[in-house]
Image (cartoon, rainbow, N blue to C red; front, side):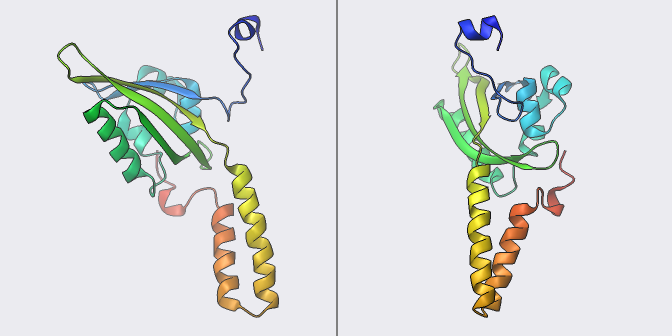
Length: 174
């Protein structure tokens, strides 16, 4: 940690833990973001600094989470209320990263939505994921030893999904 960080109370983050900051110009549909957000969303940091369409970020959100995230952002733009949402994104390696986002839409002097700013940070649910895997593994052993084949098959599928970094039908997302 450098002297400036210490003076302002900043803490050290690993690249995977650093919160990302963004601003979205609604009129141009350009999202300007720092390298931390680029890393979280698996995007090119140089492109995020010069602005990308919001769809490039939405494309990196897990398909199951996309509708609720889009709805929450839309409601925040319409109402002007703060936005808070938890969802999953795919990083550059295709790993699923759980994140939380906070944002707010700002209006111009005529009251029209003009800019949206916020922060996205990883919620580090890998501990919960590891615990879930451990519980599923223990349950799988019990199911196998008890002859519960359908339960064992279901638990094997869950374990495979937990170990799988990115579903194949989402692999082409950019």
